[in-house]
Length: 266
Image (spheres, rainbow, N blue to C red):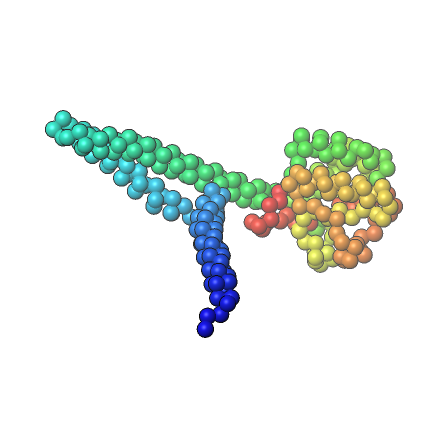
């Protein structure tokens, strides 16, 4: 005996099947778009091998050129009007496709070259010693002059780290021009074992008062905005218990330069 709700169940099953097919098609379409897009984005950024664009564009350009040649041959008077129409479209489409392929290859190659050049410049910058040019020294002095006459500053570097000592000297000169007060020992050399967790980068340690805190924060912002790895250590790091600046003072610890390719610092 036929169940009275058979029609309802059939409709429900049909709707469920339609929804399932639609969802499946959506996933397939999304995947088909996402994977090529991700690959092309990686090629555009210079992080992926551009073999597929070349494998597609170069043969397509060659085929378009062949189509143009065939079309020119078929336009001879000995052939019928139908062949002439085919020849016309072969030439027209061949020229257009060849132009698009050539332009696309040029854009892809130029983008890859630009991305590689950027990486080379970044690596060169990471290998160079830290330093401030005259313009940067002037801007640092102007930015920090707000605290002139009120903040005392001292520097720590590791023994025998000539690069860090030179950079600390430049910072000292710029802050001195901003009328920051030098401590009795402007640059102190310390052992690397004293601050094992802070072997690299620039650590700014202000005293606990508000004025020094703001001065240290502004100094960190200026250094970071100009490409240097600078930060204020967490309170639980050892340097905060070892280095105790007197009131209204800042200690600048210039550690070793970051040499890692994954850290984009000067």
